[in-house]
Length: 290
Image: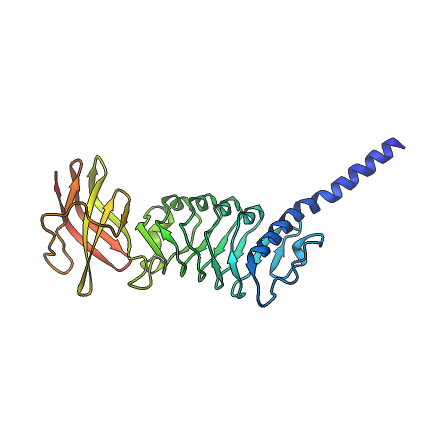
């Protein structure tokens, strides 16, 4: 009798374990719902008392009742995202585009190791792009364009070898554009589609570059009839008040500029390209000032 009771208990435990796992995903989604304003009641079916969220609208599960897709694009929702999204361990598609979601992108999204597509574009997201997204080794599509993101593009994202589509245009980003890994094939439009957005993003490529220490590079860029001066320090470039002005910085022609570097050590750079979101400059020589 005792043995039969033990077997029955084990059988019951086996049956309920998947439900417990799936309910954790349901709890995460329900927590997300509490953060969102839903005037059109698109989340009305999200009932936490159900066995799992697989019957909820805009949620797709696999054969094991794990949530693999969240489709809330263009749903007229607002609010913010929270760390609970990191509990959706099996999620492959996160579609939250064209809403009015504010706040920061949760760093916990870096836990979604199975994620293939992250579409958060056309919202009002602020803050920086989390470095933790570099952990998403399965990611192929990352679209964060048309938000209010600031800071730089994390260089760690260059490790995403499967990344096919990357779009951060129309934000307030600033800094160097990664040129390694998949970023070598992305077009300029993926960083900025207008002259007023992300304009201080740039990539510097050189045939010969010898630098021992970090240096400050004063860059003169011409946008139409206006000139814009930017300060680059190491890997980052942002609009900034100049601490040191170069002796001279005059363009010798439309596409050829003479630049002055404030250096801590000798720095030689020949046959360079500075690629910005608003254009491309070809530099034959960069002069250094010790």
